[in-house]
Amino acid sequence: MIKAAIEYVVGLGNTRIEEINGQKLSTQPMHVIKKPTAKTITVNNLSGLVAYIKSQFDGDHPLMVHIESPTSVSCFTQINNDYNRSNFIQVEALLPRFSFERYHDVENFNISLQSAFVPNSDRDLMLKLVGNVKEEAVNTIGDDGVSQSVVAKMGVATVGNVKVPNPVLLKPYRTFVEVEQPESNFIFRMRKGPECALFEADGGAWKLEAIDNIKEYLTAELAEEIESKKVFIIA
Image 1 (cartoon, rainbow, N blue to C red):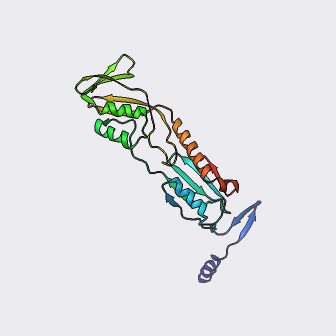
Image 2: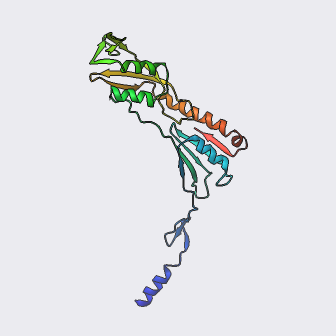
Image 3: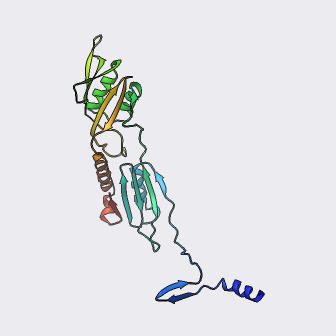
């Protein structure tokens, strides 16, 4: 019994590959020793990605730049023999926070309009309106539920009903600051409080525009690398 046990233990170190019915089998479990991949570094702007690629800091490997979303871009190598990639650098946008489809009190809404939106005519009109609302009542005009009016200060000492603009064309900060922010339609609603809310009304089309803007920026900044086939961009 002792001899058999010793032979068994010794046999544990001997792995044989056998073929049975045309299929190769191993007498012991085997594990692939995978090639190491690089640890990803994270930056928060597109200019950081451009600087990294141009520096060739980790070599002159051909690189693929993948625009994953309006707020995320990755940069990786070709697959190795293990079908893994080195994702050298990840770009994640830092953006001001604003909750769409949620009501905000007038003061916070006013601050958000100034800090989280690119100035344009509709934004300025909304600022003027919410900054002069005088009463809590919000009236609905007509039967369709689309148009609203509020009591607002109209001059130095006059107060009257003001129609709430709807829809409104706005440019929130929703993608990297280096590129043009997409302008899109929003439904602007007010209710007793008074409180204000914005609801996206473009079906998400702004996301495609933002991705196109990122691609246009990177294509211009990395024109030389793209021309020499060192960088490829997909979106």
